[in-house]
Amino acid sequence: MIIVGLTGGVGTGKSTVASLFRELGAYVIDWDELARDAVRPRSRAWREIVGCFGQDILDSDSTINRRRLADIVFSDSEKLGRLNRIVHPEVFREDQRITAEIRSLDSDAVVIKDIPLLHEAAGHMGFDKVIVVCATEAARLQRLEARGMSRDDARRRIESQLPLEDKARSADFVIDNDGLPEETKRQVKAIYCSLREGV
Image 1 (cartoon, rainbow, N blue to C red):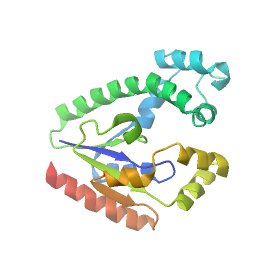
Image 2 (cartoon, rainbow, N blue to C red):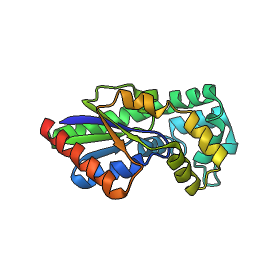
Image 3 (tube, rainbow, N blue to C red):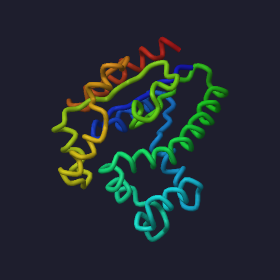
Image 4 (cartoon, one colour):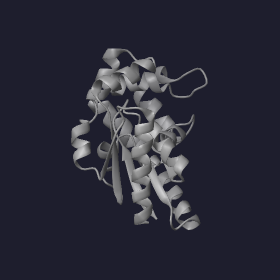
């Protein structure tokens, strides 16, 4: 089994790349999904977050409004750190459980851990390889605006993360996701073949 950390920055198209790896046969553990599950209504993390940030972050069904919470934490590094200290331990535990399950089912598995803030949150956490998805700031802003984010909010979100150049320097593979979809697919397939050879 080979365990790979996949990261990038907001708006780089990392989720698209993760889907391409899944299509090729990799197991994908999406930390965004794990985080969403960790903060489901009435969970331990949910109670802590509401206690820290107040009822205003909740929608009418008691779920946490991620956009509203993001607006609070991405403009205040102390609050972002507080949120991460609540959510990350829950995500780590579930990640380890799923990884052990995959290992018991398929000893030759290629496991891609899709971690938005790998360097910020997880370090290199025992990964065999690290992949960083890159894109220009212009492309990232365009993608974030297409999701309904204002340019100022998009820029602030990008600036709250480590620079892509720093992440790329410590990567085993870098995917340039500025071109056509076919070019991204070509890069993903080449990396997957290389990973399979290492299993």
